Amino acid sequence: MSDSVITVNTVLDCKPILVPYTPTTTCEDICIYLCKQLNIGAIARHLFAIRITGKNVFLMPAATFGDKPAAVDFRMRLKVASIDSLKKLDMNAFNYYFHQARGDVLNNRVPDIIYEKYKRELVGLGITDMYRVMLEKDISRESVENDYKKYIPKEVLKRHAFFIKRPIHDTLGKLQKSVHDAFYVKEEYIRQLEIIAPEYLSEVYKAVMDDNGSISSVYIKVSPYHPTEPGIKYCLESKKEQWVLKCTIEELGFISIRNDSTTEISRKNGIPFYLKFNSMATMYSFISLLDGYYRLTCKWIFNICREVYTPSLKKLYAMKCHGPVGGQFSYAKLESKRSNKPGCFIIRESESKYNHYYIDVCMKEGLKPKTFKLEKITGDEFIFNDDLTRYKSIQQLMAAYSDPNGAIYLQECLPPSEYDVSPLLLCRSEKEPGGFASDVSIPTSPLCISCKDLQVYKHSLGTVSHRRTVSNPAMQISSTATPMGFAPERSPP
Image 1 (tube, rainbow, N blue to C red):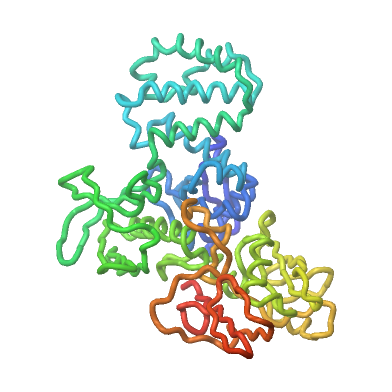
Image 2: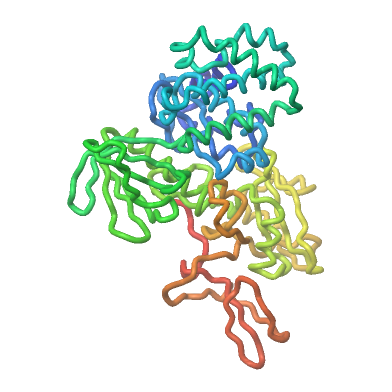
């Protein structure tokens, strides 16, 4: 099996990529391999997924491959809140998204674009793409015009192939007088697409729904960025396009499944509802979509369904490691949660390099935390900073640096929390208030507070941001506990 490969189609090249795999290789491993090849960073890679070629079925992150796997497509599956956010986050991911959208438009694979309604816009998108090629590849207008069939959507060519040459020539002549770069043109292409197809990347599934005893054949649509009703919607098979909002992504509670392709979806408010799909593969595709949006909108470290999990999250949780949250977030969390107490530290993935980690350590002088490198080498072994010792676990590393008087002191590792509002929530609405790690839901019931979450301040009373306080004339006690009970952190399934 060492020479086994899986054929992966990308939108950047007509030639597929052959990716080696073993019986234990997961779908997430394939995505990481491809992101490395395409220089897509460690944050944006969570937007991507693997789809079976020729089918609207995506594989869940933990899926593995048999002896003769079908060809698959590498797709950006999860949509960010705005194209500006994606462009700032990762230019290579932005570029991939553009080419994916362009390919879908050219091949009439955007369901919301109805030719009779948007024929002018479709021609405009094609001309915009031609102008982009002129800028990006330094090709003359005449050469691009001669190859116009490469850029105009197929539906337009099918109906008006002989009547669009003049509009193309005239419009390109006007565009040549403007001063723009290729990335600006790509951005405008996507903006125009999102105007005529605001639900681009939404997914629709056919299922049987049991809602409080009422059983119906329905279509289920997951559309987190619908202009007026974002979330999970359904319509009866007999009444197509009469969509009813079921709940938003933020209102999801948890999801459980049965072996007969039935899933139970619990919400924070309201009774659960049940969906039965025609196959387990379709059910897993649907749940992995909800899980992806839930992770990138609400709780990055948490899988909403036990059976549809993300393998890398289990590894991070075992290390008590955050994702690639960045130093600014990590420093703020150490200050907020532990007041930069010496010996407290956070482990986080590198934002730019795969298999590289950083440890932000609160130093003795009590000033800004200091950052050290932690590099993963072979297997599960790590090298810390300039220390050539190979450590097999974080516990072993902490034992080696347990001297309070040493230059580096590692006493307490702050694990990631479900309630971290970090830069990793790529799909979180930009209208929602942001915050640091101490942003939590307001509790509606009594809390059990761990001793580790209590800190005593002997100075005079002052405002402590994001904390609940109980005070008397002698001291002030601050709690950073959350409604989860003793431990604010919760493991992925």
